[in-house]
Image (cartoon, rainbow, N blue to C red):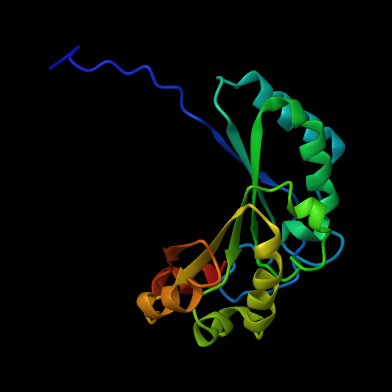
Length: 197
């Protein structure tokens, strides 16, 4: 079989860029909750931006690579993301963000239009979501409904499910408000471990 298949594939890369540890939520299962706060936490500096862009530029292979912005809550420091996008504009990149969705209606629409993909943390239906994320469901869904018609971006509901979650019910409750639903499993054992970090 050796030599039967030849592969000459250029693979697109996806880079994860952590903007800040600042966050406007305290989700009970968050494994970095001891590190995050709304104030006085480091954010991505201009020097770091330059280093990351240089690294990406030296690893380009002709494909349209993607940069995904993370936090904390990255929209708290959306100006840093905007700076990153402006400085990396010549590299043929697409951009996405992982966000809890609470600030989607608070940042400029022109900024949101710079992003191709939104992964919004919303854990299914209202009851499932608010068990771990507090009373934020209505606000997040409302924000999605306001911005979605104004964007050409892909909006994905990102659901964290536990053993008690009814995945079908959770997906069904979201599917009319987002373009797709992605979920990850969080077992009770890993939930307990993360709470103790």
